[in-house]
Image (cartoon, rainbow, N blue to C red; front, side, top):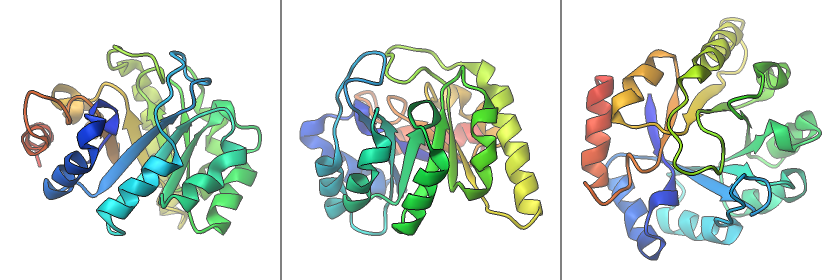
Length: 226
C-alpha cells in the first residue's frame, strides 16, 4: 500500500517546503482536497486550480498529483484542474449527474478519471462505471466534517471493490486503483492494507508538528511491514 499526503494539515505559508520534504521522504503521489464552501458539511473553502498549478510547477512533472473535488460543479469545471496540471480528477458520485460523460471527457483530455463515494453511499452507484475508471476512492469519514474518527464499517465496501477490481483485471480489463481516505494513521494502516487498498490518504498522521514527514512515513510503513 502506498501513502499519499493530504496537504490540508500543512502550514500553507511553508507549503512548498513541506511538499518538497514529502518528495525527499520518498512520496511521489500528492492528494489535493478541493472544497468549494458549498458541498461539504462544514462549508469550508480550501483552494483551487491556481494553487495546484503552483504545486505542479514547484514539484515538476515526475510527481503524480490527484485532485479530490468536493464541489457542486465538477462537471462544469473539471477542465480547470486538468489545465492546472493534475494527473487524475476524482469526483464525488453524489455530486454529479452524468458520470460516464465526465469519465469520457477526462480521458479525451489526457487525464485519468476517478470516482469517490461517501461512507453511507452504496457501491452500486460506482460499480457500473468501474471498467472505465482509473481509481475508486472510498471515504472512511464524512467529507468536510472535522475531528472524525476512522469508520471501520467501510470495510465491506472496500472489500467489494477489491474483489470487483481483481475480477476485472483477471478478465483482461483495467487495473483500477483502490484508495481510502479519512482517519488513516499508523495504528490502523496495516488493517486497511489488509483489506486490499492500493493507496491511503494520510493527513495529520503524516504532516504534523510532532515529527517530520520522513519519521511519520517510516512509522506507517513499519506498521504495514514495509
